[in-house]
Amino acid sequence: ENLFGCCSDCFTCVIGSACYPYGAYALQAKAVQIAAPGNTCITPFCFAFWCCCIGAGINRGTILKAKGIESNFFLNCFLHWYCGPCASCQEFREVT
Image (tube, rainbow, N blue to C red):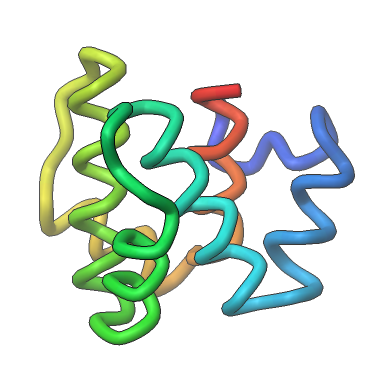
């Protein structure tokens, strides 16, 4: 999925950007739950909410690892620091 491919799923884009940060974190938490079964939505949501881009970066790494895609922790944190809503929407689109 393209990082800026929001037009492919307008509903996800609206939830992730208009309701930021809660909507973006909820999308990312659901993506972690789908990508790595056995996780609940609550833990990744709280992790991203309380640890901001660090928690979101770790969640992104979990999603990418489950999809068999290489990830870089610092790049993941960078993406969530500067493009948090886009990154969360991309992660959700990737697993759904």
